Image (cartoon, rainbow, N blue to C red; front, side, top):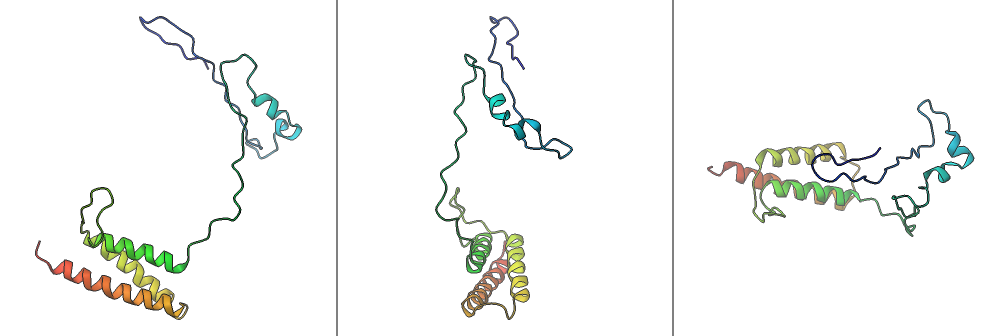
Length: 150
């Protein structure tokens, strides 16, 4: 594909762009012959003297340990934080203003209530305490905000 500038400006040829398919399989699922015999690497390199310059593909350095999965408590804390944000307890990060969205808060409280019901009997004591106290505080705050005159 060649890009050309058209119009009254002086025409100049842009560098040629080459697209190389690096998928290992054809559309029908069979292995591509270029990948199987190793010629893909040669085909992917631009010809010497070409206008396209690229660095060789480099792998990111391997990490020592994979990142830890979030715990259930962290998951709950994220949902509680979202509900608190909807209730205007936490200012918006960009505007700095606390905005109340009662519909969003109700939805988050309903989600936390559903989790409480579905996990009944399966929570660790500290998880149950956290969820119970968070739901109590969120519900009370929701009722206070919903009963305020608009």
